[in-house]
Length: 145
Length: 153
Image 1 (cartoon, rainbow over the protein chains, first blue to last red):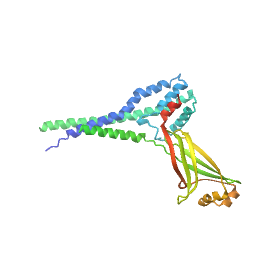
Image 2 (cartoon, rainbow over the protein chains, first blue to last red):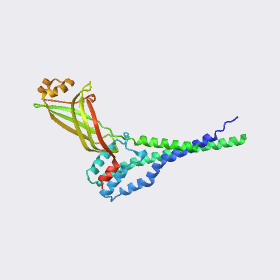
Image 3 (cartoon, rainbow over the protein chains, first blue to last red):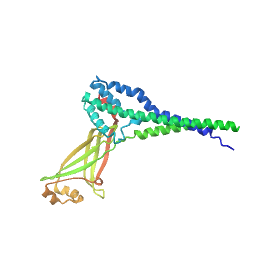
Image 4 (cartoon, rainbow over the protein chains, first blue to last red):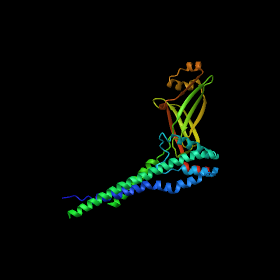
């Protein structure tokens, strides 16, 4: 007698798909809405106010691009944050030279978005694998019947 | 079954989000002690650090106590810091004029010879962590983005 595993495959596929979508949402939202908005603020003719707004937006990272944990490559980011936080607190202006640092912060955010989207793709592939297994299981069950 | 899985997934997701979002405020406090001669004017330097990367600490106040191994308080003073931005370090200096008698218990605890200090005219050291106790600390914390938006207006 063969055990019917189709329900397990079905639930696995759905659960992994839902997880994948949840993991991907912050990255997709950032890629589609936030990052273009920040890029438009850091343009060629950006004034001090625009650069400040861009920094405040960058200071609010999404879940995959947080500033809490600094790897070796991102260690310098901490100093940028410290410097720019103080600058806003002391009401000092941003200058053209700061664009480079803002772009670095943006790059870090983009890397976080990549991670979010790639995690989503991985989970969707897992879900697809579950769906294939479900199709095979259903087929086998039909043949047995 | 799906009705059971979906809330579970939501809990896992929120749990993960919470884990990454944890950035509670902590403080590293160091007390260094300097004995300036000829008067026994002792300078205590307390280093307060906001270790959080996304919280601003406001109106921080605490009582710093220098204690012995058996938890007896040798010295006690209050420190305050108005605003500490993320990762910001602030040094608070407290100078106290003390008599030789009042400083002696601290010297004894640190195994420092008073006569030697008088000869050297100065002694400076960082007190071991076990001798520093932070009491009654209070502060307000605010999200850095909210703070920057308020200040940057």
